[in-house]
Image (cartoon, helix red, strand yellow):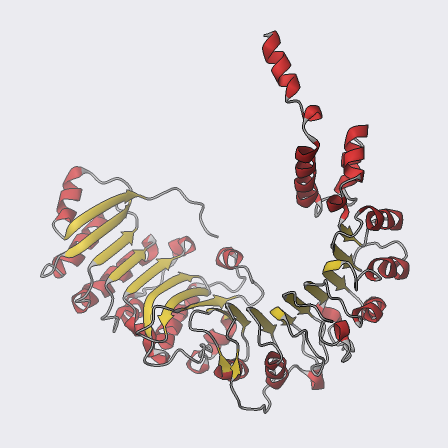
Length: 513
């Protein structure tokens, strides 16, 4: 017992090596910075003399400065952090002790120490406090994020030709630039080493609306871009120089689309790599009111001869998720991943988008959503070549009443190259699916793998058996059935339809609402 007590005492936190405590302190500061009004290190210093000494002699703990900290603390942090690169958050929407003095105290270190700078304001007068410093070269700066609340986005900051020293000084660091709600001067130079660019504008600006030529000319200056995000709700059409813009290093492109003509014009001249990941978010109201005219922009290298390797479709009230893996060159192993999110325009995160509840959700929209996908497949013939098709229906459709037989029939029609089909059904669409599938199943002559997830009560189970009785002329290589546990006699019955039959119990998951 005494030995155990001695061992416990020897591993007490008070006896941990200094290096170990420093690592723990760093994790604590990182985790708590966004939750605590004051700097987390202040809490550490109040524990004991040893912890205060360690914290005061560890510069890395003091390198994240926020403008709402007391000015005396900011001054102390600048001193203790020594020459460590700084991460700075300046937020004018929070209380700031002497804004002009605080901003000057922090940003005077922009040319020599600031590595990551984030500025948010509610008023352009506050933002003006920063301009003098933003016109100086900042060779250590690798991430600049500037945002203004939408209500003030009519102001046009004068980002002069000397913005960040014109060409970002002599820095060779990869640079990330994100601007939200602040309409920059479009003849301003951008850093030549820009690798990530995010532009988000949600307000109309009258005679000074952002045009497609503004965006195109900006992209001409960014040959090293790896990540591009454009969310411009009022992108105006105008003339532009019609020449190809090569972006050979681009890995991801995300577009939040309202004006398809303008975005199609942009995508038509971007020369993108074959393996770029494209995300297109389209507001539902645009599609449901003018579906026949609404074709989202695809990368220009996806042509009619391209081959779709896999197509995943998710359907819910007023929302559709379409994910495709397309090989622009059938002989190449590289492929473009294309994700289309059709739904509320103000939801950016995919998980939030899938779970969001729209006030305009209605049973009428789901049929239009499937109709839109059918139209998209018609307009983009390469999608019909898919060999792997996955269709899922949101559990929120459980009380859906509309008959979707015709919609599902046209969705499956023409998918003659499908070799692998996966379907996840809720009760509301089970009968519609099987009615359509019984007509189409014989046309899917290449189908070898089939996965179905649904409630396996007697009537649904019988629908499944009837489906494969129709297709009995050719056995499946693999049938995977996901649902509640089945008795032996039902398993034996399904075993007659495939070389391999796999049964899985459906996991308990939270309903997406």
